[in-house]
Each structure stands twice: as structure tokens, then as C-alpha cells.
Length: 129
Image (tube, rainbow, N blue to C red; front, top):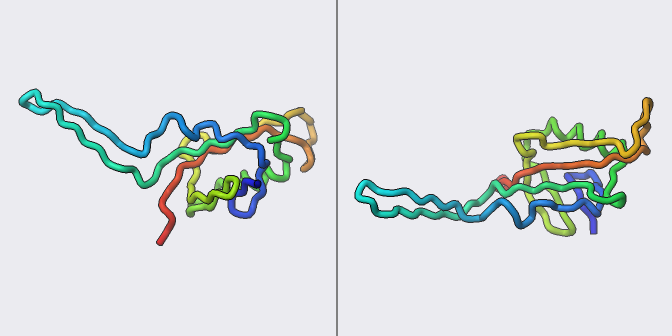
């Protein structure tokens, strides 16, 4: 199955490195009241789940042409559709360091077929109504 960002085909073996770690669908706050009693509050989060996709093997390298397409998408401020192996998410770029690409082999004059290790960071948002 494939991974796409809008109409860009991403390497299908990108690893989702934060699928089950570091985020909870429930926001919890515990405070002490003025009488010393614990005040516990909880609520379901509708959006904000991080999605990080990384090249962790040579089967997940991206060609420079794809890197340039992704780089152009950084200008997009509207919600985007990310499809990961058949599951669609409405996303926006993460606020800090949303995209990185490192050449597998450095060339002084790279071309569109050269390979790069990539890292993409998104957060989920509610789909527009």
C-alpha cells in the first residue's frame, strides 16, 4: 500500500515513528483546590495528534524530485490529505522543523534521481466542514 501527501507519492516504507508514543487522545489536568481536595479534569482531544514519517531504511529513500515536491508543499497553509496505507488523515505541517531531507550521497551537482533520507512532521486537524 502507498503513502501519499495530496498527490505526491511518498516512499511506501516510511516509518511512522510516533504512532503510539508521546500523545494521548485524552487531555488530563490535576490540580489541588484551596481546601486541599484534588480536582481532576479530563476531555477528549479532537485534533493535534502528531504524525512523523521517516526514512529508516534504503527502501524508504526519496528521490530529489519528490523532495522538491514536498518542499513546495511547505508553502501550503490549508489542510492537506495524508493517506497512509489506506487510512486518510487531514493534517497540517507541525510548527517546528516540519521537513528535513539529507542526501544519501552528497554530490556538488545533484539531479532529480539522487536519493535522500527524509523526515516529515504533521499534526492532525479536523477536516473542514
